[in-house]
Picture 1 (cartoon, rainbow, N blue to C red):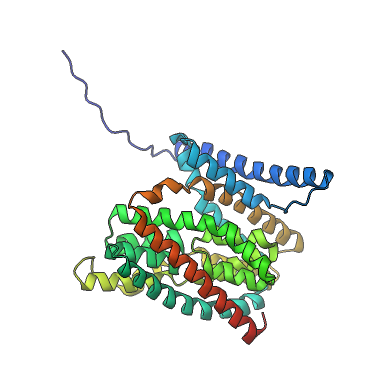
Picture 2: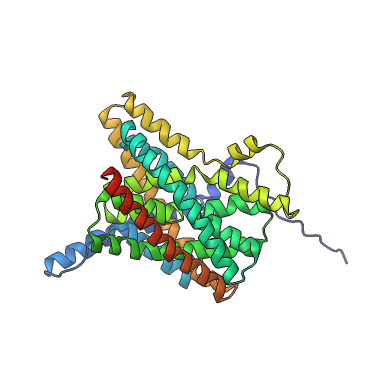
Length: 361
């Protein structure tokens, strides 16, 4: 009897076929995002026609909620996964295009303030999460990943740090799941607290950019408050993202010094590799607008494109957040993450209030 040998399926080298693989997922992102816009319009119109007192829920939150329901109740077929994973690309593209809506002087002023606050936030957040991890006796590298993710830029920071400190897949997967789950909760809590405190758009945008870990959730949290707050949140978060290379390098040197990670031979090359390049794209677009490289119509079109890119991003935030994943390592790590996030939110709120008194935001 002849026997057959099954070979592993190789990914196609044909660029067209690879491009087609992401189409179903992108269409799903677009469908969810557009459904969020329809829900926003329909619910608000229905409430108005029936004279209900109903909060104006932006499409941002509807898109995330739809994605959360799908990802936590249904099993998403594998055919959609490659396209869903592109949500981070749309996020970065949206941030780059959002640079056209900033005057360079505003970038320099708010960016300078943001950087000062970011340095304080990162220092205190790293110390706080490390202390909590030790108090609750978490594994040291899991503590490092939670600290890096909470202090800098969420999932991107954890992914960048995983290889640099040679962390286990299980630890990085839990840290990512915890950051995403807690980030989803911030979408409900941050705007509500800010409305209760009657925060200005600039103050709230700074708080969202400093206090919400993942870039997508920080962008969404800002947009939920107002368009102006969303812009400031992106700027503050971009300043925070720019620090990722320095933080990851510090942890890589610490763990390599203990013989538990690969040694760093070229620090400059390491920093450039970890630096988020979309930050440069954001600054470049702002610079081009400052030099009138685009007409008013082109600036408006690019701004609208950034909104469409964020539409796909917000749908992806919900689809990529699986709340069940946080139970894999038990309750203690999630308690550390949740407690740390609450304390960091209070800390950053205090920083913003202080900055407002000093610089008059």
